[in-house]
Structures are given as structure tokens and as C-alpha cells.
Length: 113
Ligand SMILES: [Zn+2]
Image 1 (cartoon, protein in one colour):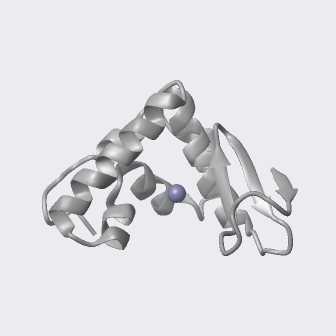
Image 2: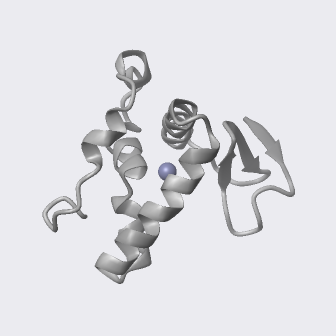
């Protein structure tokens, strides 16, 4: 975790770039948020980093078209759904199985939150 005064842009707390978590100085970054970002780091490594970002953006765009709601589309991305579901569990990364985010990859209205 790298605390600094430039990344991310003002108004944002943290960003995970290629597995490095940048936290804007002066912002509160909780253990839960750190676990959330560490789950994303695992997902990135499973997809060899760059395909993670491509998949992430494409899935968000598809869900945006389906939901017509940017916030809802973001929360329904499979990577985010896994991270939000387990960010409060301190032991999750110890027992997490590879590619488990695929279980959250469903397009039915029932599963899009
Ligand atoms: Zn996230």
C-alpha cells in the first residue's frame, strides 16, 4: 500500500493499479477496503493483469447497457460482487479458490444487484 498525495485523483480514496494499492494521503482507508482491493489483486493475477482490466471494463459496459445505471452496473461486475461479498472476512483470502469470481458471473435480473 502506497500512501501519497497524487494518486488517485482528488475526491477518490484509493486505486489498485496492477496490484499496487495507492491511497491518497489524508483519506481514511479501512481494513475492509484493503481486503477488498487485495481480492482484486488476486483476480488480476489469475487473469495475468491486463486481461483483468479489459474484462472489467467490458463487463461494466455490458451491465451498463442492461441496467442503464452506472452505479448498479459497477456493483454487479463479477469481480466487484466477489470483493464486496467477502471484504469483511479476514480469512477469506486464505481459503479462496482460484477463479471463484466466475461464480458471480451471471446476467439474470435476479443476480444483477
Ligand atoms: Zn472493487
